[in-house]
Length: 120
Length: 515
Image (tube, rainbow over all chains, first blue to last red; front, side):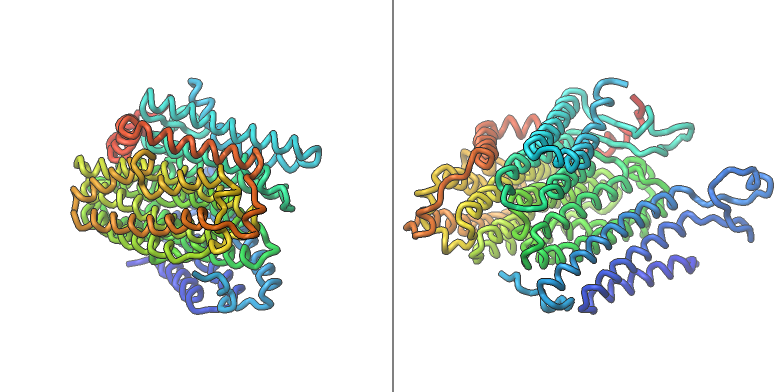
């Protein structure tokens, strides 16, 4: 059986791709990119999740509690990766928003159908 | 720790240092900052040259970040590794060389622009990202460097934000590039979920004999993302907008390097070093070949009808990427055979050659724009009279890209024709049709250059020293590389192709580990 968090993350990715294809407003496109990013991050972080019986995993820090109770630790690597990916996502979004501001200055609109002056 | 392990990290440390120290130096003096940037990029070229020499002499090189071996106390690699064989070393050298040329050129070309305290850091970060991509042996490390490179290139495309052109191209480039990056990250996440590691060589080791559907889906996603990034045909539209809109020194880097380091290089690495014989090489190889044939026909044909000089060069880049993809595709479809190795050697050779040729042509386009303020081919008639050096360099560059015999483009294209004809004559014919279109496009530009001068071109003159020196160096490089084609092919390109095909060697380098 596919865990539901995988389904959720692929659902988020599909929503993002759908919005990227069918929406015309630049801000909505930037939001779509963010949604795709969140979907991928959710997938990545849920890969590191561990559960033993009905005991959920703890944070990946040795405290002695895990060995005492036999509780699994969640994978630390995906968390590090997702932190990095979030930081990258934020910088892409920041640049995209600043481009959107500049585009509004030049075109007086955020409609990407208006941004068709480059041809050939 | 030997010398090479001390020197190697400087490949990314130097540009990073230069990027973030240059705004501070800018406060003191502009001349000092320019000297500092030039010293930094020359130093980077020196480091990559040393690494190339070392790998050429001693074989593949493994470097572990912050430790002596990648294993720690575990029996599998847990640390970030850099793995360098002939192929990466060659790419790193090309990247550092062309970046240095572009930076020398910018000193004069960008003089009239404002915001230079942002321009130089960005261009060094772009170089840093590409160097990082080509040296790394870790998938997530690759993704981080890819994003560093991509963000810097989005910002540089939209650098002249007072014009609508830069902004429109930047928005388009960014949307496509960010989507492609998300696909690549999704592919990496799936691979990590399947095999529980991010080290490329260790994934290859675990994948042999344990190919799963998830890994195939991951391959599809990675290929889709990387074909986006390398401007392959169904998704090439952003390239033709983005490359002309950037300042010419940046166009030279984007067209010459970014689509190769961030597209073809890593695609070849994933296809050969990670997947290799675990997948059905014939099927995947043919998929790449079909994309390649489309790319080289459409790209070159679209170049013929352009009236904007830089747009013509950008479409020609799409066409030349087709040749490189063709070599990679044949190398995969005929995996391990002599034809496959030859095609791959041709692809690597053409990657290096095209980096030099297209950088030269874009720098010349920049010189023309600098002198005349226009890049419409109809206004450039007769420029050969008033800009003789530039026009001569353009003829050399155009002849090389068409594949005229004494120049370097001939050697790589000949190897590609030969191997594709040996592999499948139909594909060889398609490759030659592509070249016919390419010739038509460039002959038109040369014809314009030698036409009757108009009032605008009569006033033009050759650019100053800082712009002329890189143009001359690149021209000389093209001529010299054309003089020894078979030596270069035998000593550098074929070993690079063999290093790429040798997946066992790639895995072995990791497990031999340590210093």
